[in-house]
Length: 304
Image (cartoon, rainbow, N blue to C red; front, side):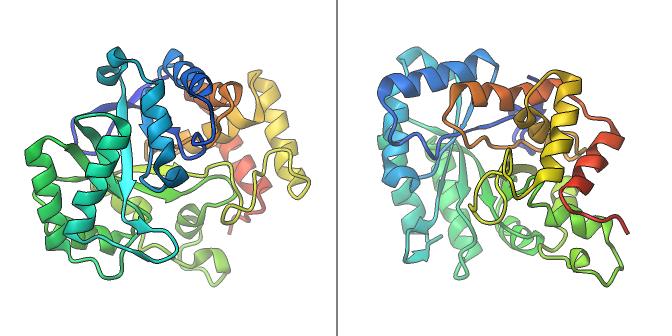
């Protein structure tokens, strides 16, 4: 495992983040094994959200931690989604959400807080006021967003004194519009449509770490593409390259993301310790340019 700079925060973080969305139904013993597996492979960055498991993911995670672990790990959580009702980036909701996460996580501070998806009614100055207060009180150390385009990022950053450090975006072999648009510039085909305001290049230019979420999924939570009969050509190519490096297809799928020069930090989605280890192993592999494009084309993409 190697580390990357986390935006302009000054934090050095592992290049693979450990997603905790699905741990809410696990036992304390299972979560402890999950955490220990991550730490034994150098992955000490754990991604949460206040809505994961209705807050229970944060609770079971806290119960599995020993007191000596807190200073050795980086905890990121998210707020802003009121499930089934609305998005809420109001000052009051942000403060209330953070206080709830602090209690569930049984910690005095959160290392990173992300705004969870865009709120159409966001008032940047109000968000900035909440962030300033949380930073001054020591409750949150660094801030970021998720699923925001370049203009939304610019609008928020214009009101903030501190940097937006991260942007969590859906990205992977089977969900790569921000790659496709860049390859198909000035073309009439569907892949040329710029759907995000050039967010990939914007984040690179402004030193904002992109955190790909659901990197193994296709569509919007439609399932995993690994060993899926819908994608025979892709799985055959992943098998071929995985055999060359003596690793799993999961490892190669993560290595494909890490090969991009944007220095992304993909978030794992598995609760299986062995599969988690496979994700983390990707940090030790650098695909060739030819291999990267072979995988890209095997996923159904056509080069202009």
